[in-house]
Length: 567
Image 1 (tube, helix red, strand yellow):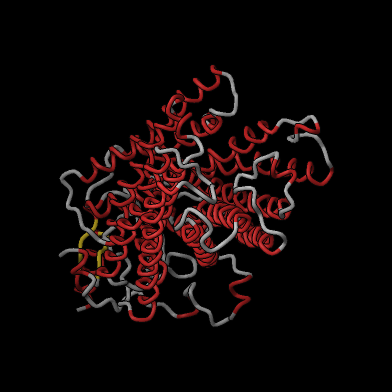
Image 2 (image 1 turned 90 degrees about the vertical axis):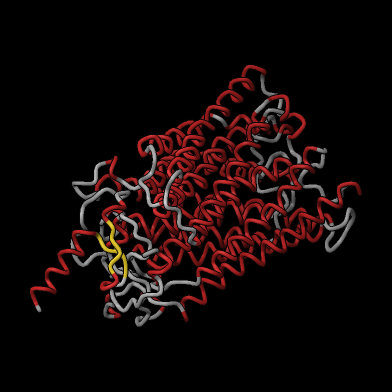
């Protein structure tokens, strides 16, 4: 019986007393505000980052509306500069970076390990409140003069503008501490709380991706904090660090900023790749192909990501030798990413593919991320980057990687773990319809921007030549359709909370540990120690209609023999 047929079965199992359920709200606001339960913290992160995504999306729609015509449409040029800066800052620092590690990592990591919680529950809660504090500072910049520097805070403009650079910098500085706390917590949890039988090469690949991400968070984020501290010091005290009038060097800021921000790209994309690895295996009904290569490639991406920041600066005047070295390293970092893509395709080859909503999003991810990766090769080549640098080609490439990669995989994880988190199943029809809309609208929005960039349209410009208007209008129509499709996806999930069928413990037939507990899990995740096993041994799963879902084969046989003895 297929997974979709299974959903029609009664799921009147796994019900727990409300006091044991982490979703229980009977103690009110303070039971959530002071919680140390990693699942509740994950839900608070999830709601918060989705709120930030909504705000950033509103800014994006306003940008596309303004670009409908070559001249002024709905706002003046100063407002436009503030809008695209806040769009980039909110999306990058409040949504893309924390979305998967902080939300899905917090929810899934301890349960995948068979643990009761993370190593430092108090630090986990503190990381959330640091995120909230940083978000408040960053959003305060909107009402305290705005922010018009671009999300990169490039000097020397950021040292001279009258906008709220100091307020926004303090916000990003605080957000950095939240990221470091999360990374430290995850590293210690995976080192100290794995079961004895779960060796490194028996961990699910999502955990490998979180481990690699945590390394980047801990090592790279302090560089951003130092950079922004120097920027604030220069603005407040007039110290000559980046301002050439004071004897500083504005290119130094770029080196500092991109030494963090390029590894930060992998903070965004590595957990996304981990989600895709889980989904591809489960819905192809095959173990992941080349497990060790996929695991090692996550570490390779994390380490190589520290060495390629200079490809953002090919036009900054750096030496030819430096440019050649950074170009070569940029091409090398594509190798472990390619390993993942080819191994996903090999996993699907001759598999029993089930086109559930998470699988549809995973397939969308592979297509969109591949386009983003391949177009990155043009930007890594010295000759072509000179023409494409600071054009809409870069905008399209960035969004194909970050939005087509991180956002799409985030939604894939949302649909994949939604039954586990909420205990409710959603409509597959509406879920797949939303996925199709997101995929089609995304390409309609951003693919024309490759053409714009190749024809010389610079990014961040308020006005543009009339010959570019058609491409901008196509992109704007796509943005509205993309927003509508995302609302379809949101409606599907919200509707399931009220009208969805109860979810069994393992609706997908997966073999990793989070599917061995009830949906949603009890307070301490497991009623008894979970069974050991290969997280990709899908043959250990059998569909059992008497037990309303998939069960581990040994557990199912034990339960049936117990029932037979009772009879």
